[in-house]
Image (cartoon, rainbow, N blue to C red; front, side):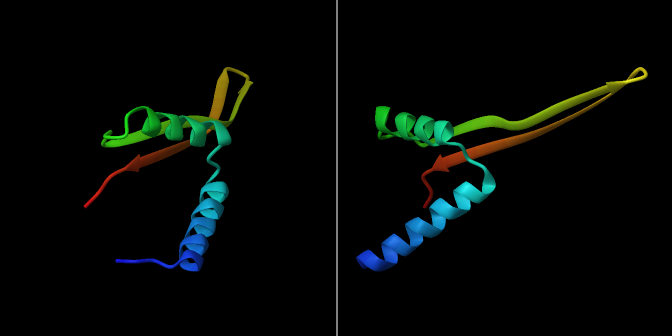
Amino acid sequence: MEMNDSKYRDLMLRFAKEIDDIGVTENMRKLIEDKCQSAPNRFGASAEEITAHFVYRHDGYMIEAKQTITIVVKTCK
């Protein structure tokens, strides 16, 4: 299956926008890229990062919230 350059660019731009909307950081992207380049025959690579976190304590109670972003890149058939 052959894909022309403009279709490929459109798909890559869409993918990049969706990755940014989800909240994947530049550090996560570089980590995945490094893992894939260090072992090209690797089945998959993943990274996880807490992008937002807060803790509220008052009168013996604690409320904690975390926003965790996970990215997984793997080969599929």
